[in-house]
Length: 157
Length: 95
Image (cartoon, rainbow over all chains, first blue to last red; front, top):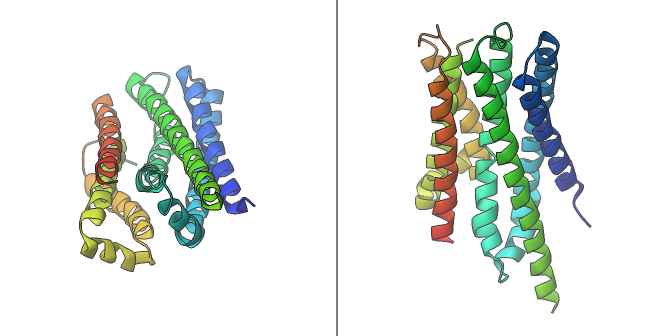
């Protein structure tokens, strides 16, 4: 059975990532109402990414490290942990920092986003970076799950 | 709030995460030190990333924030890409 913590971690992270895609779309052509919606989306996204961090961290330390990692590392797919999981768990740490930054910039520059091209472009690019980086990490998570299934099947053969 | 300080603090923190990640693989002493923070080296890096972001923001907050410069954002994006590739490259070479 799939551990429910993985489901909660993945859903929260994806909601957080889509919130920053929402920010990107709102700020492409900002009005006062779009900026207000972008601020709400960024707060929502930041909260979900922090929650995904806590839940994923608890799962990684208490479940993955003790029960999943040894099975993957003992299989022919040990690279799934040695490369994919190692990169995933560390690059993930970039996301809450970037999300907090974008949220802060949206509040700091709310009055001037219509006229300040540099601030607007920064928020758009950083939101896009959060979305792309986050979904690359989600893809790595899918690879880790596949590696675990492969290791289990190989162990039964 | 100082935008320039926030962006620079984020860039330096992300670079430090990459350095700590690679450093903890190369030095068992450093890995052990990180583990003492929260019982696991990953928790240690997580806690340190938040602490360093806050401390770096405070230290950069004396910088002038008169005009928002896209150049700082460009440097941050470059730092994210280089740090991510450094972590990926390290684990690919050491797998």
